[in-house]
Image (cartoon, rainbow, N blue to C red):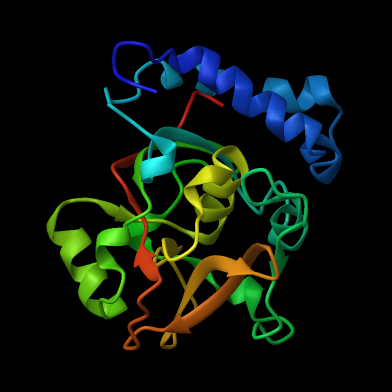
Length: 220
């Protein structure tokens, strides 16, 4: 996937097909045509994704189509993720006490440009921050003018590019917080993607900090 070969609209169509095959229309209370119409205004914006090169295996992708929890709940979208060439469904860790997941919402800096669906551009899984204190990693990313990923964006990244999530190169999602010291993250457990959390002051050698260049809405 390079800047010379990349076709944003074709990649957008692939991602829409992926979501339809995974049952997102039913999660949204829509049929496939209605779901396609919901996200269709974003197709032209996909063609404007920043030039690469991008290599999913190396942790960089041009964009992902994000469907928010307003349309499809996190508890239902996370089990629709798998590892690359894996079959075991992803899951939400039990460390999220009942009702807590709903409190992990986008920070002001990571607010979605549309309540239902949008594009996230120029994503990096951020393995350079493996072993760094999450608070320090988040500060560096802000200084670079980049934005931290939210829970929904992390799920979208693994959904559309499962090859991004690999052993020792997993990632935190600092764009969703609940007002305490917990930082959500997606890593590998039981041969599947797991949505959990870690403390903002505790570094992990296998956990980086994902970021993106921008969020873009269509005329939805």
